[in-house]
Amino acid sequence: MSSTKNHSGNNRVDAGISRRDILKLGAGTLGGALLTVASPSAVDAQQSSGTGTRKPNFVIFMGDGIQHTELSVAGNLIIQTPNIDRIAREGLRFRNAFVINALCAPSRATILTGLYSRRNGVIDNKQRPIGTGIPIVSDYLRKAGYEVAFCGKSHVAGGLRNYYWDYYYGYLGQKPYVNAPIAEGVDGHIGRDRVAHGYSDDVITMAAADWLEGKREKPFCLYLWLKAPHEPFIPPRNLALLYDDGTKIPVPETFNEDLKGYPGKPRAFAACDNHIGTDSTGVTTLEALVKQRYASTVGLDQNVGRILKVLERTGKLDETVVMFTSDHGYFLGEWHFMDKRLMHEPSIRIPLLMRYPKMIKAGSLNDDMVLNLDLAPTMLDLAGVKVPDSMQGRSIVPFLNGGKPASWRKDWYYAFYEYPGANMVPKNRGVRTERYKLIEYWEFDPKEYELYDLQEDPKELHNLYGEPKYKELAEHLRHRMMELGRETGEI
Image (tube, rainbow, N blue to C red):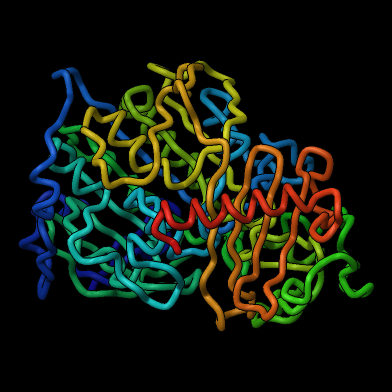
């Protein structure tokens, strides 16, 4: 059996026919393929509100677990991410973007559905599918005349293969960085998983590039969701020694708080098992953690650049809404932690960058609180599709041209559910306002809390909960947390 090669010479998929031939011939080339579900009936009830003008294309880049500081455009003086930076430089950077559940599968399900975790059915990483009959953004876009493609990692049970895709190139669950089993599909039919030789993010990006370079007569939406820099933090071979040049990694102010017993923090926080050197990644030092992640993120940036070049070469760049984001943040040694899950800023804050020169002024910045919950309604709004009343997020389109809705959220609800589970982070929920944050570990007996004034204490060093002068504020925030929890269906 012959095998195709990507642009860098790596074998892409063990198959007896080239990818370009597959894309030309369609689903008939895929032996033993699955027929995926067409757009659900719920979508049929939605009507497009487009004006007849050309709808924008979409390319949605996602990295896995990128802290909001982990880009050079965010002021990081070590890592260089020129291609991702370009999206911000020529577009808009949201500096207060957050996730409502800092975990891979739940966040991705929220981005696809515009729903909180309990509403969409994916509350943790335990292979839960999106709830039966719940449409995702691509269903609505396809109904509105779009071609839709998914390439990469969804982490949602079934790998999104039960949804219709004009083009699909993805894998199930977590797969290795090298020689991953990947399935390919066209016209709603998806073939068997086959080993794709090479660095998986590069292979997947080249598949996406091949699809983009095809004859795209309709507006299109491409989700390109890559694995980097997810643990075990394996960068491409050419970047393996990127920071082995004496680069010094700054030590976070709270790095040694574990040695002091986490003064001021509750038992639930101290009980977390997400310390550097305590998991299966083999990373035992702060320097190794940060350098390997940064090198992996540089690899991700290079793949973003490859797609931007394709869009430029085909004349589609300025007709495309280009978005870059992450499914959650990541601890990079704060409190000696790695991973995510907790409601603290390194875990819940994400990069969110958008480029669309027809609407967005280059170099724009926004400091309003936006959520991953908002991305689905935003995409539909930009496409001229009526946003379903069932979606819990709000369109951020008014922000794109420097405006602001008449009213915008002043607070929002967070909840993490996967306990017991990896890294043994207790269940936690809370409310974040523009200034304050209350965190509750609701299964501890008695319940435990953290309270922060983010204006005076942005690094969350001083837990104010239990101090008499903040008693009234704590009660107010606890009441508001419960109120928001009930409104969102999370309680």
